Image (cartoon, rainbow, N blue to C red; front, side, top):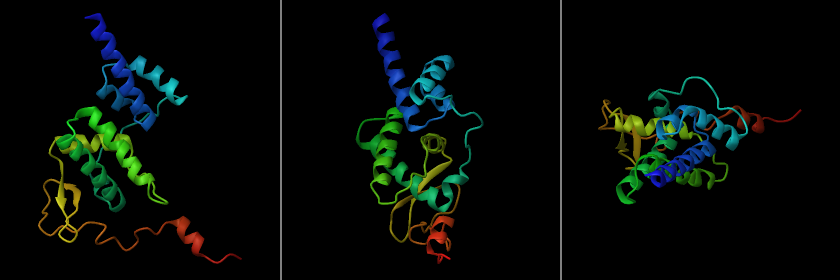
Length: 181
């Protein structure tokens, strides 16, 4: 029994360390491991060299619907669901693996910017499990995109096929295009 407890704690520390390295908030660590809050605080400081950020978690389904977050959330959720369905993984292990694959995809694109944090990815999975969000196909490209569950989806067109007018126009890009002097 003692060996099982030690192995269990070792696995819990590995999960917590992985999540901390990815930037997970303390509340996520508390939900996904059986380690005490004090142990998690010490581990966080050891891994990151600083205390975890405080404050409320970003709890809103609406964030996942806006243009750029929706594309990134849809990519992550597609990876996550594929892993759960085809790789025999689930729970926090599926979350960690899917998030690593998401990071690989985004960072593999020149100028790619990570939009989805591990904490938001964790919430997204919870929203799906609660039936608050789902993937629906775009009628133009047939890709699967994150939407609210109770919306009408028969004519859904994604943000890639129909980007908003100001998509991709940031202040830094605007400044680069302005003449100097």
